[in-house]
Length: 270
Image (cartoon, rainbow, N blue to C red):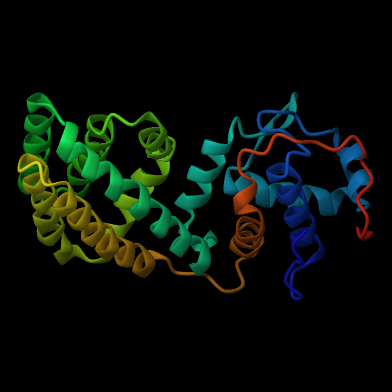
C-alpha cells in the first residue's frame, strides 16, 4: 500500500486506504460498502473520520452515496478512470507520460494498418471529419467530437480487434484528453487539424509508414498540450489522495481479486 503524504490528515489517509482497497479489488466496483459502523471498525477509526474520508471519495465521483441505501463504489473501472481523469490535478506526471506513450504505441500501429485496410467508405468518413474540424476551429465542443470520432474510425478501419478494443476501452479517457488538451493552447486548433489531414493523406495514399509517423507526430504534440493543461493544486486533499493512489495502483486496473480478511494492518485510530 502506498504511503500517504506525511502532511495528510487522518481522514485523507483513510480515504487513501479506501481507494487502494477499491482498485485492488477488496471492495468491488458497483458493490455497496459495509455499513458505517463495520467499515469504521475495519479501518480502525472513528465514524466522523470515516465520514470525512467518504466525503472526499464522493466528491471525486469514486463512490455514490444513496441515502437510505448506503454507499456504493462506482459501477466499473472505466467510470473510475474517466472521473478521475476529469480531475486532471489527480494525475501525476508519470501517469500522464505513461498514458501518452501507450496511446502513441497503439494508435500509430492502428493508423499503419488503416492505411492498408480502410475501405473507400471509411476514407470518405475520415475526410468528412477533417472537414468538420476545419469548420469547427472556433467551436471546441464540435471540434473535440469530430477529433475523437476521427481516431475511432481509424481504429475500426484497422480491422485488428486486439488493438482497437484497447482504444475503444479508453473512449471516455480520450474524450477528456481532447477536451482539456486543446483549450490549453487556443491557437493549436489549426495545427491539430493539419496533423489530422496529414494522417488522412497517408491513409489515402496507402502509405502505412507515413501514417504511423504522422500519428506519432500528432500524438506527441497533443500529449505535450495535455501536460500543459494539468495543474496540480498543492494542499488539495482530494487531489493528493487520489493522485497517490492512481500512481501506486494504476497497473491494478482490471484485477478482480479480493481478500476474505477484513483486518488491515497499520491502521490508526481516530
